[in-house]
Length: 419
Image (tube, rainbow, N blue to C red; front, side, top):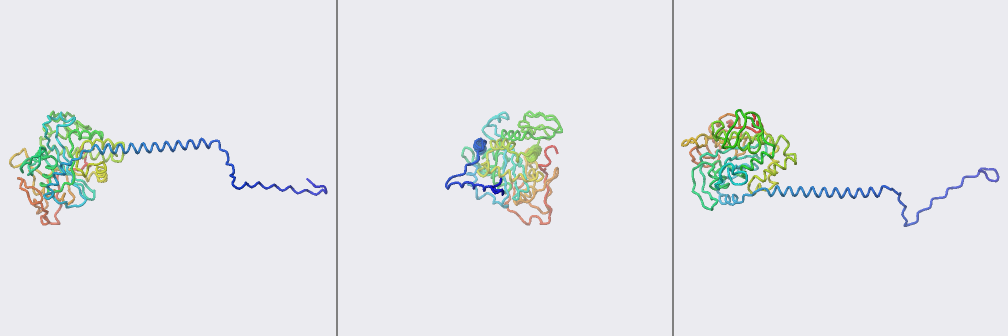
């Protein structure tokens, strides 16, 4: 384009864009999908909130359900408080001694098939579970039900007081329940019992079923009518009813002694511990809940272990203990001098064992060995073979510091029931 003189005309200047007036807003770009996106985000947020609230509500409901399953034994605590001055003083801070009592009561659903309910119960199985202060080991010591011991004066369920007596151990539970059993154990061992748990036949069966059974191996078939048990020889998995029969059977297995029955109980418990630790039950909520539900419904315990948090803390503290450090043994015993159908302690080996537990020292076990006492050991801290009670005070001069630690007959959970 040229002007009239023939010279090129300059291009016209572009007009500046109009400035927006003060106070006015620029019109946003129009996005036809924006309303739909905002609608979707709102519903997503609402859905997530509902899920979170539902999960929290369900979790709280499950927690309260499990927590309320537990039965608290307040009577034992009140009775033990009356005898606080005579109870042993804890020696190893941080260690725990828990008395596990298997009740043979016939009352309650599912228990009448094992006999008539006479309104009484005895301790079918009693175990001192010692958990080391550093949670490096756990030692379960069985006390024979036929062991002859001094039973203190105890309050009966009717409110009366019994006389002190020399009788078989499981009479203590029949006479005065948990408190009487704890006081009898403390007199026998000079070990302070920190907590206790009582479980009956039905509870044991439900615990085994909750872990889908426990594997055992039988060299010979079993047919025991009293224990309601009939099994072929070989490797097999036992569930609730069969498992109970296996740990209770005595008359048709081995030599029929209670010692062999305790050995089977220890083998079975070792296999149970091994399975719980090896198949991820403690780390898998869907598998852990049935176990917790069965456990909490099955136990009666003291106020120190009567909440789900308390039990969880206990289980968590034991979770890191290697199965080879979870040990089972029976207190050294032999047939009672005056009645072969009863038991008495073997000294000084029994007192050595009690002393090591009191002081939270390692306990060494090996299969099929007799307890080997340290040179110069004495029978302090327990009861003599004929029920003569000693002073229960540790004697540092009892054995030289260079003497080897004793070895007791026992097994570890790593061995299982098929070892």
